[in-house]
Image (cartoon, rainbow, N blue to C red; front, top):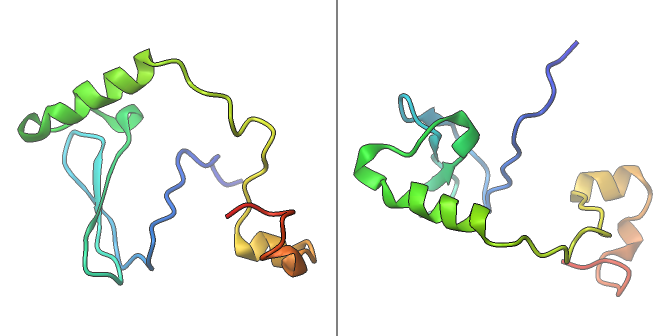
Length: 97
């Protein structure tokens, strides 16, 4: 079968490609938008030496206690809502953007 999903990125626009910076966890995605998408996934590798500050940010985020604000939420895409027959809930208090 298919391997399990390792990471999920939902950029604000359609993705035209993906480029991984060698030997790092840094990914670039050309988008159908003015700005390039830049993503860092520490599990894939360290930050490149020229942007070492990203490792520091990641370490700070790991050290900070994670808030459990969304533990009781189920995150869904518009497609998933449609397949569940729940598209009518868009714009109501039952769904949060």
